[in-house]
Length: 196
Image (tube, rainbow, N blue to C red; front, side, top):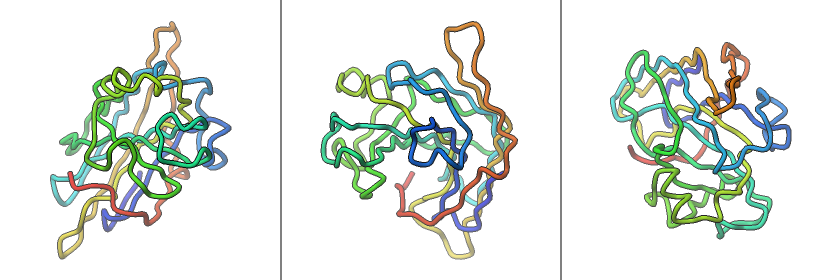
């Protein structure tokens, strides 16, 4: 369970490849996944918040060593942040697929890429309008909460429990990630994400 007393902070559960910069403190995910081979990911969660304008969200950690995205140094960590309010309150399911809406940020410098913070599109749209993105390596799939645009007086607490997550592929054996690992939650203070 992840819990924030102020949702301008940030907490996440991470599944990373061994090559990911954050890999040492996370659960291991299969390597060799690219944006165009990314399997649908579903997570069963329970989310509570003081306000309805916040939501948990998916984050993809990418490698872009050849600077396909542009506007960053080759070694920088690039994140795709889910950019929509899922409207979750209580138990529900989060799904990451071609319809999930993302924007791009250079996590090393804090600069938004691909047109800026408000330039968002579904994963399918990004891949069709920017074909070079398809071969980028996915080094991490994260489920996060927090980094809201502001907090009203009296606090903006929220909590997120992830009970299971699954990478659903075309192969007979889908990869299941058990998420009963409270020790993998990290709470840090970072820059504000966006107003939802």
